[in-house]
Image 1 (cartoon, rainbow, N blue to C red):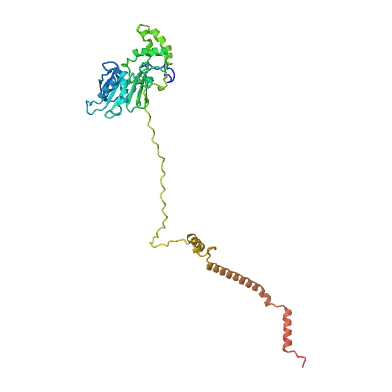
Image 2: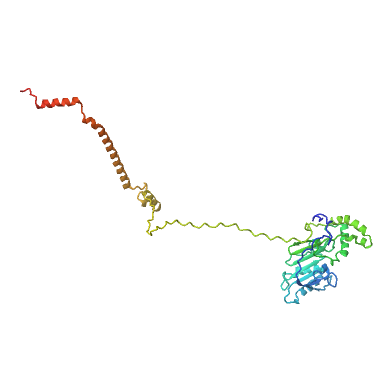
Length: 389
């Protein structure tokens, strides 16, 4: 079980104890020139199981005076500017161990990015037992730390290494343990496997960190040397919990193993565009079968009021002829009045004709009294003797 990052690191898996498949580690280039800055004379070709100095990565040592770090930085700069054995090869690696890691870090600070110095595309760094390691370096409290850089850096540290895993709190048991670690841990990076899935691996900027867990406390190693292995095993668990209380492991990932490759961000999908509607063509009249031309019907607005209104809107009421009154087509109104009068006369004539038709029988058959009186008048006027005779 893996302990939480902020809890005491008492349950870290032992190196090589987790039965996982070998992790993939692709930091080192296939072909490069490697300049080593070792802890002890003789080079560090066999450290990290010889992973750095293998295949087509040829290692060559850069001797430097251990106590004269400034002079070592100058020697490293001279070596990096030397022509490459293969003109087609440009990649270089600086492999620094302990004090050699400090020399490499000082070169980054002083010469990195200067004219004539190898650029980030041609140079990278591998640091082990680094006292200037950002997390746990013994010299970080003195103001020394790996700077933020464009160069790729691989920083490997073993748990309880005095140089690279110094306690965060001044705890007597933790200090005693880490000083024992200077002898039993710091000097032993030969068996560290970069591919071990029990390692904690993460990246910050251009720096990839590897934290290698240590199962047994270095403080108890003398007991094992004298044959008291059972006692050392019995004390290891309880004492390790106390030692870990002096460390802040919050920088570690939640679980061991290689960092997962970040998934590429999905490309934003463009919203589907609706096709623009095609302009509708006006309907065409079918051609007659006999080939004769057909007349086109055109609607005409015969209302003169609309014409007058259009004139008034476009040219003004003064030009329209009637500024305050609505334009009226007088002939049209007169013709309408005449037609109305004619219709009224026709209706009156029809009513008169109907009345005359109803009165006609009375005129044709006069009363008998009127006929007799009329006859008497006629007879008296024609043949009656007058009184004078």
